[in-house]
Length: 432
Image 1: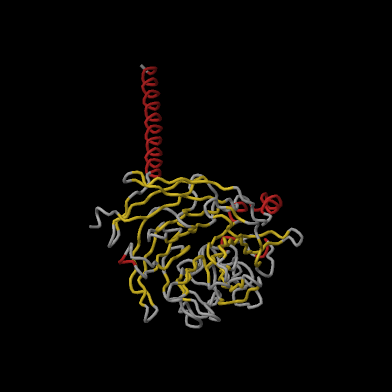
Image 2: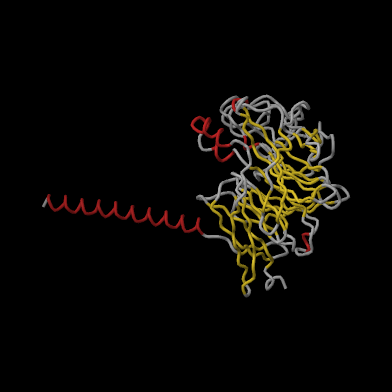
């Protein structure tokens, strides 16, 4: 009888273990299935949207822009891709082509060889292309592809944020000239400048055309903020935490505005308003209206507080130690909008088209952490934000552009080795 009880107990235990395994496996499958679901339709206040998703096996960062009727994408390693669109009945068919062009001489291979073991996975992710911009420049309207990228100086064992350009020789075939370096930030940075080391997640690097001869380039503080390292954003002898105006012909730049943390977005609208989206500390993401010679306060002013930091200030900061305004932002130029809660602003556009007629002249800001777009209505007279609409897309958004026909394209961060370019269109049937 005892033997039978033992057998029954063993059977019950085996059954319980089997049930637990099955439930766990099912739970993991459900999570995977939910994770694999891709949103194809999104409802907003005024429009029903359709998301056409183009999958790319690629690295992080990089950027997108328009060339003719194509989207051009440069990945982190300066590989060039074009995305073409054709109609097939009622559907859009997209083709992705990789082009054979010379890589930018940023000496990433040497940096990885020296620091990959010490810095880990982030070395490859953070070192490389930050943004691209395509435009006509000079009196002869040369079509240039501008690229911002980190660059390694092997001789001095340091790195910069550098700007390169290539002339587009053939638009249809995407043939480019050799790369020319225009500008490199100063001084050259050592990986040990801050803690954590090599803080290139706060590099900025956004490019926008100022006029036919000049561009603006955002440069982040690389965590040099008086908490994680020396404060550089208020030092006008340094390029970090600044927006730099660069004359392409002379290859010379000067400080246009300063007191920035990580200005990841930059756009100049038709009225010549210069907008920048700034990735701040926790609760301190901002939209700034940029004026020449203005000081935007970082790290001495912010509405945000510090991220978790075991180094100097314990597990969680409830303030930002260098702030001199008691988080009132009273001492320097204030943002026209600040989120307060987590947002993680990346790029932005001022939407200027009648395709989304009710969005005309609105700011569309992309987010990393909250995986959404934010539509902001600007009061032009008072230069303030009077409405915000969140548009949930469930993807980390690295870049955003407006297409020639008024649709919007976004570039996502990688997920499981893949990233996407998503074309956002109106659902015509539901917007009648």
